[in-house]
Length: 528
Image 1 (cartoon, rainbow, N blue to C red):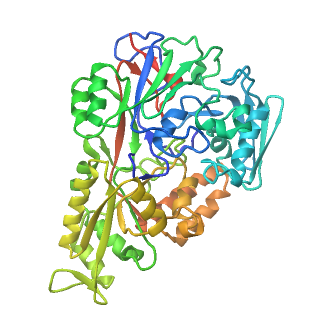
Image 2: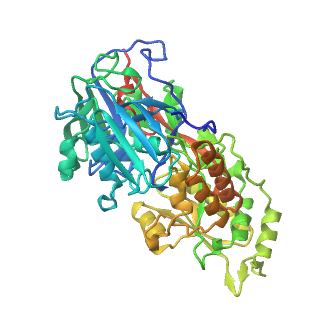
Image 3: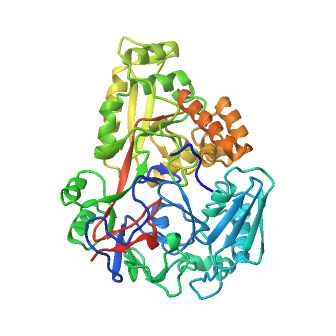
């Protein structure tokens, strides 16, 4: 099964971040003229401690950065959104049923056999809402059940899912002992990965060691593949300048760097595997009583933004026009270029729209309606250096229209409170980066947080909802076209305004690797 022919962050990114924008299949050359050498330690920087290592509960990018070293999936989705056999050598997909045929000889970190029954148990565990796994509600629900016979897993679904196999195929698999004692997964790993946790130093580093007998990697990778490291160390380095210095000195092999420190790395000729990041996406609080519950206000203030001015400030040198709202692999139903377009900057038109919405300009230069000023609370991510100056530019423009714009820098606690509890925000640099339109629908078409859902924007777009409903039960050939129409409805109704994307670069020093969403350890090739 391949991707549809419709081809295809930092704290403050809601849910899943990122998609790959570079790298091909790993090769036995460095791409820089050097040779590869086996052994040694590959050191990757992570920005914070991963905390709980249970892969079924992982949420933060730092946790995924660590657990994806030890756990694998049935299908490997390449950076370009193509599908490669991983634990499964083949699969079928009929929409309401799917099968996975496992490769031979797969074993777990504890030496036990990884079987088709293990896969079925994983899928059934994730499908149980009582277990509240990360995958539940996004790529699997209680509609799915799985059985095993021999080396074949058979899945049935009571509802049609045009992406059933690939959705299930990307769930990280836990071995039998881990499923039997889920609590043990919090500080140990028990997966099928080539590398397993050998040392954990909370707040400092997590070390993974290569194990023998690995033969089932993507692209046929085994222990004998030239250029693999002996160990992988995920080291906590929060300061960007420190990450840059360690990359330049060769002490780090991998590290994400944004902002001005990129110039030093680029000047030294250090390349990167980049992930696409919706850094300039704006979302709106459409809850009743907030200014952006009115689509005319959303259109007005979006139209006022000078994307040519704001975009380079927030995105830096790696800015890219947005090509869609789906960002993460498997890049389902991404169309490049998209079927929608964004309006040209027009301050006069913005003013007319505000007038039409009843927000008239007073003698004091402030727009009012029913005696109340037009106050807008614009939130952004405090740790993301480019957010504040870009927000200042937006404020300057909106203030000139008579809007009272309050800028609010958020830390992690503030994001959680404002988006899901107090709802005390109006708009800002708030991003969603899912891997499929089905996940996107949880945010734009699902239940609101006060009803237990993820639609923290309180979007109610009837045209989008109707198309999404059709797409969920459509055939694979028809589904993507419907999802693309649905996405266009979100853009044209200004339920979101994607000012710009950029590449979030993971720099490579002394090694190369492939990074679909998170670094694939079997793709690492150490340079000699």
